[in-house]
Amino acid sequence: MQEAHTPLSDIRARIAQAARIARRDPAGVTLVAVSKTKPASAIESLIAAGQAVFGENRVQEAQDKWPALREAHPEVLLHLVGQLQSNKAEDAVRLFDCIHSLDRPSLLTALAKAMDRTGRRVPLFVQVNIGAEEQKGGCAIADLPALLAQARTADLPVQGLMCVPPAGIEAAPFFALLGKLAADNGVSGLSMGMSDDFETAVMLGATHIRVGSALFGAR
Ligand SMILES: *Cc1c(COP(=O)(O)O)cnc(C)c1O
Image (cartoon, rainbow, N blue to C red; front, top):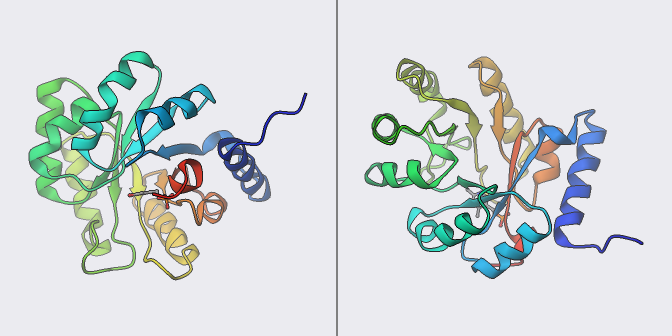
């Protein structure tokens, strides 16, 4: 019997194809299913289809949606992919298994404190403002070495770098730049690529891709 085509199986096949071309092991790419704005029922369907890693971009929304899902599916992992206010750091450390949006010294201090208080060590990605866009979150490229040094001093588990490239232009140069910054700074994880460009990201070394609308439909 042929397996039914679903958005999830299609995305997995496309990840595998991009990885094959780049001579990478597809197992080195974690698909984070970004479920922001989507109801628990849609998340349940994806869990039933075998998806085990999800992403949300707001602490409050995740606090509303996830406690029940977590209880029903303790094996599922939840990542925070959106900006984080320092006063929500402890909530985030309690709720999420990975945080992709560390981007400033004050948040680093708040996360370190929250990890001490909760006894949880949550892996972090440092978000880089890769296109030097004024209104965008992320640490400036020039500030990255100092932020990473501060994280090392605080013994925080930094797993890699994350970016959201500028909209409307080719993403590949920005993905390549993030890869270079990671190599230059001695971190290995690369959280990059979304619905429109995850194959490019996989070919350029992404270890985590964050895919929302291509899995769940338009928001
Ligand atoms: C919403 C979001 C995504 C997923 O975007 P899609 O284009 O729907 O795949 C990825 N990363 C971040 C930071 C997001 O906020």
